[in-house]
Length: 173
Image (cartoon, rainbow, N blue to C red):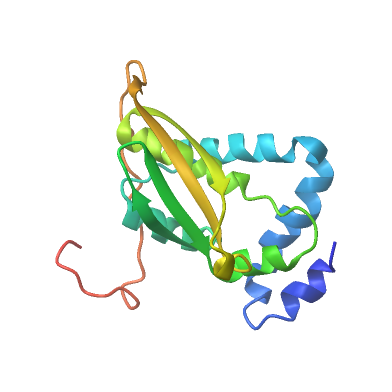
């Protein structure tokens, strides 16, 4: 693995990401070993249950606040939603040699969509356009409208706190 500390600290915005990177890229892989991907996916789903997100705008804000990166909804069909995650945390993680794992984020997105729609959902990392591969990861979340969650009771969405000074004025806030 390329030196985590040197990679992060060499970036102008890296210091703010160092605590999360230390846990996600150094400690968790050592503790979880070959089970890292499966456990991280489950953990992402668990986090989404604890922090239910009501809409894509709130998801974007939450991902930024959680230090995951900048989330963007890029495509939506009846059974698939494509998200791209970019920003400094993603860029730094991708600069490290070895398998960088984004299954925590994938699990979160899958559970978030399941909660919003009341149907089963699963997410996978998919091919990112070549020109964005160094800085972006892409997730496809597949939903099955025929696989309704039995006795589904939608959670109350988490009220997202926004920094008023950085928000652009919109009529819906």
